[in-house]
Length: 67
Image (cartoon, one colour):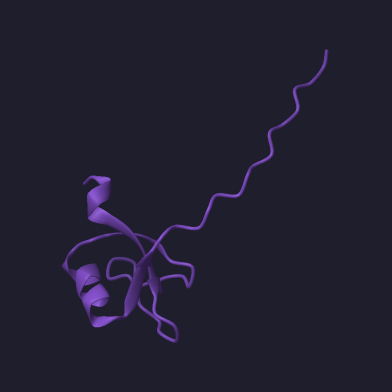
């Protein structure tokens, strides 16, 4: 599956949408999901919204030890 078949989806405000494979609720900030018939239906019905994933936080780079 390539990236064209995936999207970052988040539940619409006030809704709890469960993943059909894990039965876990979709987090409010969203998560990458495959654009299969289940998730396309949620999009069409307005249960989820498609957006951009949150920007990655800049990580710390460990300092090299001086010998």
